[in-house]
Length: 202
Image (spheres, rainbow, N blue to C red):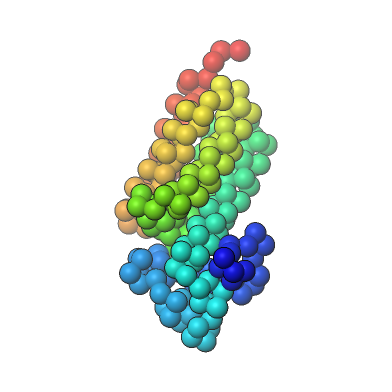
């Protein structure tokens, strides 16, 4: 594997530009529309620019998956830090989480690209392993949030919450934009409320 085919830990400005354009193309046109030429056009770069950095489709896919899950994980970590400041405050937790999800839905390319990558992973063992690793990281963050709130920390519970949140986001994407925020807030109120009700007595 050449350096150009690798997915670097620290992205240069040009690599970031290319990956952001690739996400825009994937979200808008799906896998069939994801070509180096389409990426170059979306990025406003000369033809051949993206292929110079990511020569193969596999290298591009790997880099995109790293970028997408990294961006979302950064947001989740920031949300976890905010929730740490308000343990037991259900209303604030719902408001903070809703604000994060609403931003994802308002700028939905990243979220849509993640869904496309997830579907592709069902037919690609390497991509599945890559996304599974990132999901375990998100599950661990959710476990930390639960533990700070006084709930038993188990991978089963944390994993179920992550899966439930995925379902909420997918359902929200299928609704008209004007209805998404209310649906997300109501869904999170039910989800987080069930955790409060299930909290063990001290």
